[in-house]
Amino acid sequence: MTRATPDGPPSPAWTPDRPIVRLRDVHKSFGTFEVLKGISFDVAKGEVVCIIGPSGSGKSTLIRCINALVPVSAGSIVVEGIEVTDPGLDKLALRRKVGMVFQQYNLFPHKTALQNVMMAPIHVLGQDRREVEARARALLAKVRLAGKENAYPGELSGGQQQRVAIARSLAMRPDVMLFDEVTAALDPETVKEVLVTIRELAEEGMTCMLVTHEMNFARDVADHIYFTDRGVIVEHGPPATFFASARDERTRRFLSQVL
Amino acid sequence: MSAGEPQRPGTLPVLLPFAPSRTPAPARLRPVHGWLLCGLAALALPAWAQGGAAAPSPLEVVIKWAPLLLTGFAFNVAISLMAMAIGTLAGTGLGLAMLAENRVVSAVAWGATQVFRNVPWLVLLFFVMFLVPFQITVFGLRLPLPDWVKATFGFSLPVMANVAEIVRGAVRSVPDTQWEAAESLAFTRRQTLWRIILPQCLKRMLPPWMNVYSLIAMATVQASIVGVTEMLTLTAQVHAAEGGRPELFAPLYGFALLCFFVYCYPIDRLTARLERRFETR
Image (cartoon, rainbow over all chains, first blue to last red; front, side, top):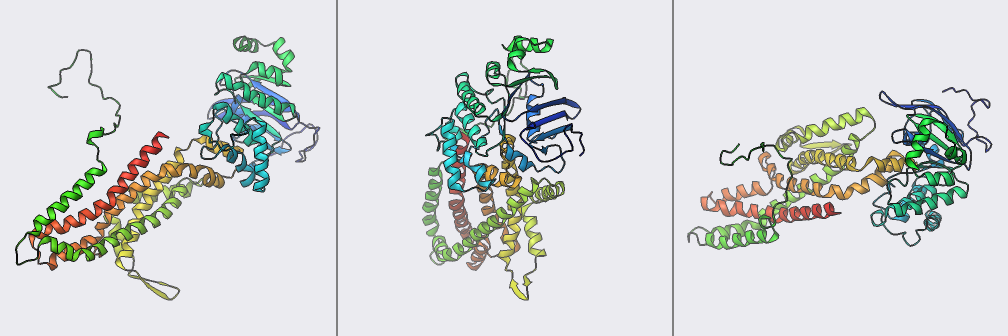
């Protein structure tokens, strides 16, 4: 696959001065329905990007394209020098760099919280069990779930399960974290505990891409906000300017509905 | 439509969605029923025992031949257990092949499963009995294949197909989101299947798997039709050896019936109990 890169010939080597995630004219169709109609943007290392927009605007599809859960129809996505649209893509190599948290947590129900966190580093990365366990316990403590190590997902609240899911992703030591409406299925009182965890992560310098409906959270945490509607980015900018002076009519209508 | 049922105005006779209701508790078979049946049989046997003075009583006949008949029953159990073991191994492979990403592999596996599931077990048995030679030569070593071994292969075919369907259904019943979660953690497809999906299915697969066993255990008597020495064959032979007296028919076959019932009923109960337990989880 050939692609024009403004900064020289395509090279797999990634350096911190380049965006860690780069999307160029990404298209995605399901049958005849075009969900993404040419999305382009960059995410710098350590940046927190929020993607907002009405339901059905392709936000979740977009974020799933980044770790190749959904194949792209056209365009280019480069994550740390890995071309995601390359037909010979090493999906596993890509997914080791990109962590993902889902709306429905998707924990493994037959494993305890601790085992959920430990599984991938042990079986995918082949790391030492004892070392992984120590790290998994530390991660669970970090998401404020110390003492819940041996609980099964079914015994945990939604917010607790979602925090285990975050710890599970972090255990792979990803460079980018994708959050797909992670608070949408939660009770209002547990939303906060999950958002606190994500905020801490962002403050530590983790590169985060969030699809979210939590506007206040986006305003507080995001470095950059993208508003998508019907498969295109309608408007974007840093939160201060984005929320204060949205220019597009669609953006203004959406914001008036959710704020 | 029944004429006796008065139709209220405005109510059309519609076919309501069928809801399989649990059998109400009073009508349900309980272990006590099984024991009652055994008790009745035990009571009935002495009645037969008071037969003519010249010929041995039916009870005496049953007791006399019980060791032989039970040996036959042991063959039934052995055939069913081995058929189940072979069928489960092969069926798991076939079920996973049906789920393979390779279209050809999954299509062939699907076809095989459909064929072996939708033909009478007895026909499969006949095929195996007459197509498999009585001995095979492996590296110059001649291995005899006795009838009961061939019958075991014959029964393992339907077991295989049914287990394949159980495996496929159970794997399919796990939500796609589990696959997605595993994928996003860089698990390979194989790792996902063995470490995440199948362990979740085991519980779901157990009751239907036990159900297949119960069926195959009872079906092993069909081996008598192709001349395998098992309980039913021996019962017929014993009956003939005792002069084919009509009054021996019920006790001898009743004994066979009792053996199978005592063996299969607890399995059936356990299956039902497991089903209920897993359902509530």
